[in-house]
Image 1 (cartoon, rainbow, N blue to C red):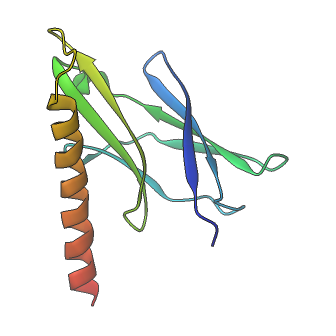
Image 2 (image 1 turned 90 degrees about the vertical axis):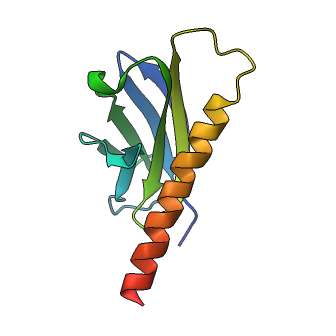
Length: 121
C-alpha cells in the first residue's frame, strides 16, 4: 500500500481542511484526537479525477481555550499523519509548551497503539 500523506490546505471558520493522497479509492479511516478524546464530525470527500481525499475537521468550540490545544490526525493503524495546534491566551513566542503538548499527545497515541497491539497478539 502506498504511504498516505496529509497536507493542510487551510483553517477557516473553525474547520481544519486538508488533502490526503495515497489512500486509493476506498475511504480511509481517519481519527482525530485531542487529549485522548476522539473528535467527531470528520468528513472525507473523494476526488477521483485527482485521486485525493478532501478532509474536513470541525474544531469543537468547547475545545478552544487559553493555552496550547493539540490535535493529532492519525489512521486506523495508529500512524500519525499530521497534527495542528491552537495557541491562545498570553503571548507564547519562543515557548516550548506547544512542543511538550505535542509530545504528550503523541506518547498517548503510542501507548494506546501498544496496548491494542498487546491485546491483539
